[in-house]
Amino acid sequence: MVANGPIVFFTFGLFLGPITTEFGWDRATFSSSLLVGHTLAALAYPFMGRAIDRFGIRRMTLTFIPIFALATAAVALTPPSPLVFIALAGFCGFVSVGQAPPAYAKAVSAWFDERRGLALGIAMAGIGLGATLVPQFARWVIAGYGWRAGYVALGALTFAVAFPAVALFIREPARGVRGDQEDRPDAALPGLTVAESVRSSTFWLLAVAVFLVVTTVNGMIGHLVPMLTDRGLDVREATTTLSAVGLSTIAGRVMAGYLLDRLFAPYVAAGLFMLPLVSIAVLTGAVGSVAPVVAAVTLGFGLGAEIDVIGFLTGRYFGLRVYGEIYGYLFAIFTLGTGLGPVLMALAFDVTRSYDATLVAFAGALLTASVLVSRLGAYRFPAPHARQHAVRAAVRSVRL
Image (cartoon, rainbow, N blue to C red; front, side):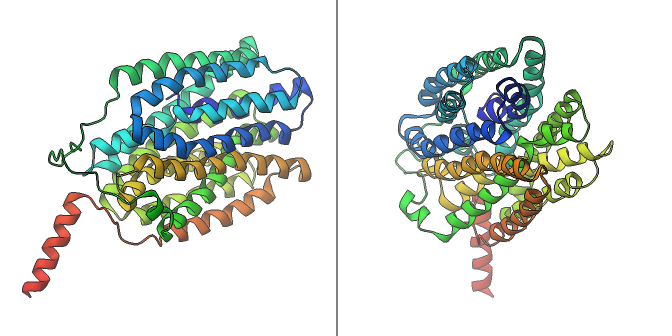
């Protein structure tokens, strides 16, 4: 609920107006802070993934949660200097890697195999719940006490929720004990090495597809509040619409997880990646009474698929041997797109005073991503029941 997404990204649009108004900055200047933070996080994710593989989930997350909480609160110290603001936001993004989905996705993937998709969907639905509740909390604090108090409150919330949850409940199975598989204490976890993974076409097809989708979806979500307020909605209505993104993300993650276990995951991903096309059609037209909700719901379902898809496909195509590091590389690409999307939207607005040109380009990106992910091919590390079915089918064909 208080991962870096709900705390940093989903509150981005709420701080944009108050800060740019107070300091007289344009939207591109403010949005560049998000790009810097996400770029630094992207550079850190592979190292964090390697550290998680080596030292364990609890040790790394319990170290970084307090640091991330303090860094978030420290943004409140910003003077009227874009460089200082970008530096503070950049450091916040850099240390946010310790309170992010990869560590928790590894924990879930280590415990579950047969129903890994659904388990990931349920666990990652917490991000959707946070995306629903955290912006409302931030809006209330900002409205009552100002944007500086908003950052302090978000830092306090992060520590109060995340640290006890990890300290009390997060555990990793003993070596060789993994979900519904037998205890094999002397066996290494199956999987490719990092070098084998990044040399494969599968890695790059998935990486490019994820980059295109996350740039598109998070670009639109980052500017959803200003897009709607520019078209006449008040901040309260726009924030409520943003919360609808979070609610639909919860449903999207659980639904995506359920489907990933039962259908061929690349085809599921391709279909879910195309859902935000509905949002683009809505946001380039007239914003009526129902249109903002439709846009929010389809964006939420598209966003809900992304993290589930990365976590699930990492295990199925690259295995669990160095899951944390490979997921770190993919999540680094995810993070770059998350930071780039809002900047592209802001630049388009500052130049054209409209978001429409970027939205049309984003539609092409979604179609390309759907085609790429559908070309991944057969799983390299399928679930046990899938392997058993394949063996039985092979035996039947030999007998025939």
